[in-house]
Length: 232
Image (cartoon, rainbow, N blue to C red; front, side):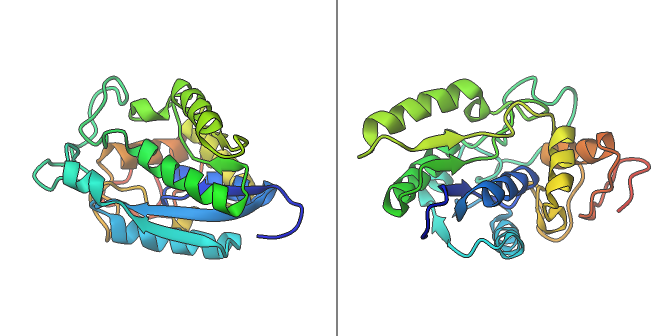
């Protein structure tokens, strides 16, 4: 990284929200992208999405790391093959679902902060969303306020800040913002269970489909179970 432009690290999973977040980061700063493979069911497909999004957004500085702790710890349908990924039912977000990976974002942010210190980056972008989400506790504003306090106390300069530009937006608003930014939604991957074609029935797929429908836009990623009337 060089020049006087603001420097940032963006955590880029390859999903819809992180793609929009990366588009914002690339627009407003000199950006490096970090992807974490942690033994999730769709890690190869997510890695493919990460690379494609970086290429499209012109993010050349990128890092892919492996976190073995989360899959060894288990306790989530995303990392433990003995726990089935459930179909979405009822009110999504009413309770913390079995797809929650215990304290996952802390692992991701710790790596991002370490890299930011080395790069001289002062911002870390993460596409956390509180509204229209599965209700994960590490996607709440209070979590990031607390984490920023930890960063300020525990880094050399204390000048790194986590940025959560999507946290208060609805999923439909995120889709609209992504379309304005020309974020490459066609390269993203949101499905929790499949790598060939989106299942369309897990919470992540359903939230995504509802978002595109509410935004009156067609999801460019095909689904095995699209919402009624939605183009594929």
